[in-house]
Image 1 (cartoon, helix red, strand yellow):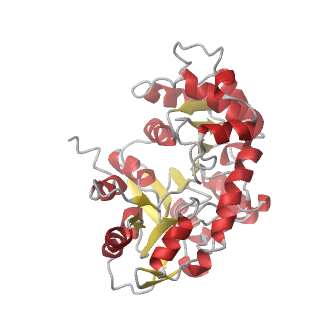
Image 2 (image 1 turned 180 degrees about the vertical axis):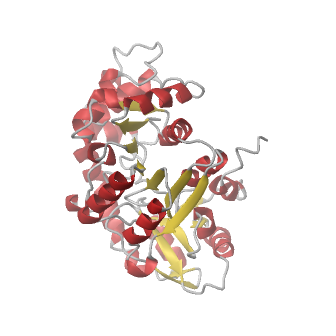
Length: 370
């Protein structure tokens, strides 16, 4: 195996349970739509949407219809030609890192963190540092510490709000202050915004980074915040057309272009973000009421900071002398549910990522609080 592509921790951990038919309770997206449910929600059938789709290759940068939908319904200051589509968000991340970074570049990322956000720049030979969200202060981000990293030299800062795995977010004041810091020090800002759309109240939704900053990049996807992972479409929004050109050159080594069918479906479905969010939030907010009951995981006491966004939490293990991986394996073997331990999130904080966006969440609560 090429040493530049080490196995990602989540994949390796999940693979160790092959054959056990575990129920995922680590997910970060709401309960996926069925086709019938999605058609009813948007008021159009797949057959109708796809009746005249050209089954040739799509444009490398994405179809005009999809990019126009994204510009019209998901951004306020970003034009269709400043948006590029991909086969999921991870391809977008891979391409933008490879287009922007060189060996030795300094990259800063918020943690706990989705591992590919760190691993891809590490694979490129970058100097990667993390700044921990403060679990003792509702997972807050210390902007003074961020500025210290910027002063020491930083090419790229990577953020992810709504945050995976904690469910944290920034206030609008904090967001504006962060943009100002990036502008002051000339730092590129990559914002993984795949959970945008599942804020528990509209007032918690932040502006997109692409709309807010000339060196900002927003990555989105239909699978997470909109609960349609079966349509494999992600996107990158950025005002810097030179960077987008380089990103497209990298993409030429990967998917080259998306499926016309996926892009046609996404172009229609993404016209209804409010309807999709309304359905998803009905599930999330119902399950959120049960989070206060999540006090133990197979007899081990945990502390949960109730989030304002997203549908996952990072349940803190109170006894830090215990291995979180051993507890996660105990949960799998005793209850049949799979949760992810903190060692998969590049953090010193001990805990577990637990999703509460599915219809199985109450079963998980009952299994761990007999």
